[in-house]
Amino acid sequence: MNPEILGGVFLGWSLGANDSANVFGTAVSSFMVNYRIATIIIAIFVLIGALLEGAPGLETLGSITEQSFNTAFLISVSAALTVTIMTILKIPVSTSQAVVGGILGIGILQKHIEFHYLYKVIICWIGTPIGAIFFSIILYPSFAFFLRKLNMHFLTYDRMMRFLLILAGIYGAYALGANNVANVTGVFYEAGMVSKFEALLIGGLSIGFGALTYSRNVMITVGRKIIPMDAFSAFISVLSEAITVHMYAMIGVPVSTSQALVGGVVGIGIVKGLRMVSGKTIIKIVFGWFLTPILGMVLSLLLFRLF
Image 1 (spheres, rainbow, N blue to C red):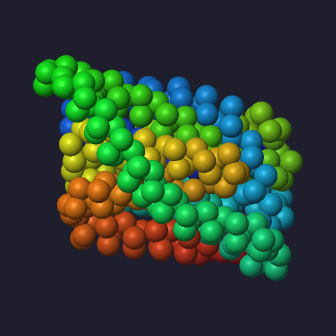
Image 2: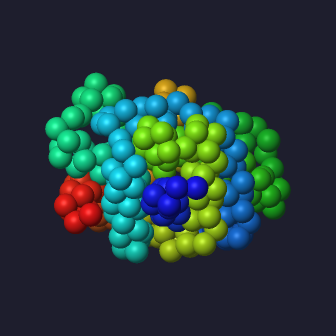
């Protein structure tokens, strides 16, 4: 394996450590699902999603600007540093934005940016929370009606919600792998350093490794500080996020699971007429979203000048 690809492995690890929270954060922090079981599920299904449906995103992300061995390495390292900094600060961020920020930094230096690919990505970023809001508004009353019809004992309901949270987490992990593997190895694939299968395999494995080793902090932050909610609302928000992210995986554009999850929660708030998300924390997240591509771009420019 070319040593430059270690930058992609570092990025995949950072992505897994940060974005795993969007799949199982609430379920783990509320003790509905064991943390270790959650991370094992994530590692398995992220890899499956990457291998089965991760290919379209490789083409899009790798085509924004021309890549060489060196630029691919610098982009992945700058994005990984960006995501790692945000993870240490316990802020869920968009790895897609970190990667695109790094790509834009290199593109500015090379004076070559394919804007039609960039516009496609930005439009999908905007559509991500909107799509999750839409699905959440549709799914919440539909599933609530179905569960009311079952008229279950509270112990049976508790077991049902654990089962549904695990199912939603499995789908969320699959969608995460399918959509975000391009963030990890798309630039290396475009530079001709790895085959398509190698790009998907390396990306999927590194994301899973991040989930297994360093995802607890952000997972607890998402579950307890950002989105304190009941098990049913958590199920709907993760399901809405997974559907949205999976949809963009099929389109071939890596998007933010964090933005999709918050969109899902906002949709539930619209249905219930409740203020479910801490305004102060949301401001912190939005600040992170704006800072992420800028930090990724600045770091790639600095690394390029240094190395």
